[in-house]
Length: 263
Ligand code: UDP
Image (cartoon, rainbow, N blue to C red; front, side, top):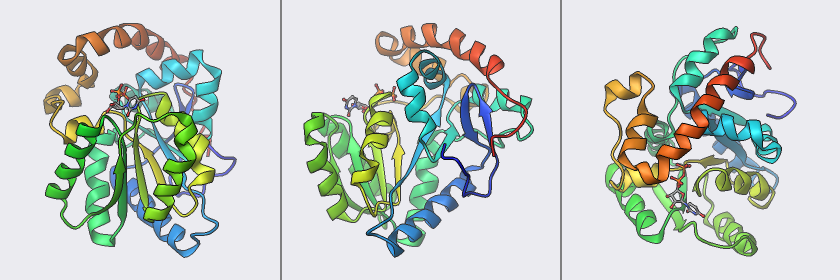
């Protein structure tokens, strides 16, 4: 989080991370405002980096100062995890709702249709990236997708990737490179992406859009059990992650949540 908060929502420290106490709708409005401001000042505008907080990220930030440092440079961190929302009740500004990136994407796409915002879709394997782009075009025919590319490139290609994105005149850059690569990538490359309104990290979003991964039933999402559903759906990849990170995240959510707001 920068040293001041230009947005009109409070920011509270939950599990060590400065987290926006914001609704999905407000967040989509912020996206539109920032993208419009970027269009008015394309040469100088540096993208806002919008990251999300969940148990895995909280645990990782606790044990890896470099990742904590990257998270601290975000312009907005929203809560993509029910436990984060529950822990925020210990603060003076409890979070009004969970903002899963997979849900927020649809708010953002509706707003993009209304305001003519352009999306760039970065990350995932080529086939999944293509399937996600097709799904977005089918669901939101009015959203202009001005570019896309897979997420398997070396860091010495960053400059070329950024140049392509700048040239595309994208307003919102969606970045799915997995945690923590996507957070590091967004922070490291924002200075090379003048004129882009927002960089939004989005982890497994394209797998959901492409239909490669099912969403948990609503009752599990409401109980904060989406992680369990995902772990059982893909145990080889995810079960161990949650077994390790959940207890650490639970501890940090109690120990590093502060009543007084950051902003
Ligand atoms: N991914 C990528 N490049 C990489 C590593 C991962 O594009 O170097 C993609 C991967 O294909 C997947 C997405 O990042 O579509 C999210 O991966 P994962 O599920 O591991 O991330 P998480 O959900 O933990 O953020």
